[in-house]
Image (cartoon, rainbow, N blue to C red; front, top):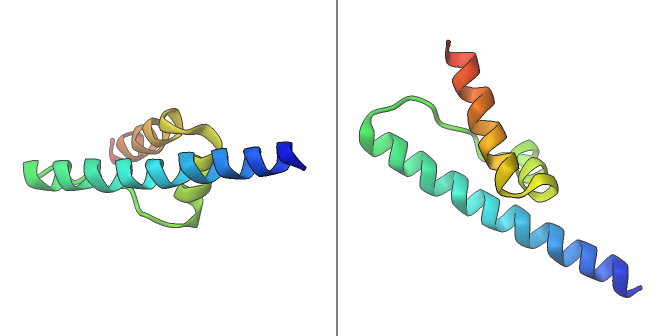
Length: 68
């Protein structure tokens, strides 16, 4: 039972901090006039939760790729 609880807490912490990172990067990009925002939605939440900060970087990488 402890493993499930640890996994869930770890996932939620990564997801919440990932969403905070997305919000902060979106605000930074908006202040610079760069149109590369990543949406804050359930898919972004799951990606950040599963992969952590590399998942957030992946979301921005995909967004930049789609802009080209």
